[in-house]
Length: 223
View (spheres, rainbow, N blue to C red):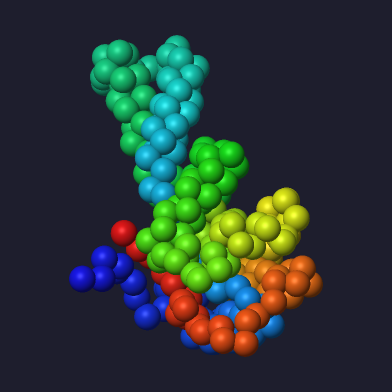
């Protein structure tokens, strides 16, 4: 039984982008000995820590507001009661705000956590999609996540043998800027194209008997 659960095309990738990315994967594989897997995620994690942080920040702000308002009339409630109600409201608003305001959620998570979680999710996908099971260990996974607005590249040992260290991180950083300005589809397309150029430039030659070992279409959410 196939353990993968995917849609035909990830929801954050348009039909046109999906077709262009598939062609870019085919082109990269045609001019190198690599097997390229393109992955598009809506988010790499649920980030429950953001909800707790949002609740704490807004609850604290509400407490400060309550302290400032303390000298005012109590409006029919005991002062302690309405101050407690105000703080509770701050907690609720803070927890809910991270759901509807993605930039606020990203800020609460911090860039280090966003990068680390996407890296972890990409490595999980590398295993789930069996990118490592190529004849010459020349599989490479290019992942983009819409929420994190970042790119991660995971390459197998056959590629690391010919491509200098730091190359894929540089590519990820450059194409992440495209994700932020033009969306995940455009960023993933640019990343796959650049990866293909890098592989061809560093002489990862295609064998005469090479076969297409992994599907070329864009992969989506998985468990």
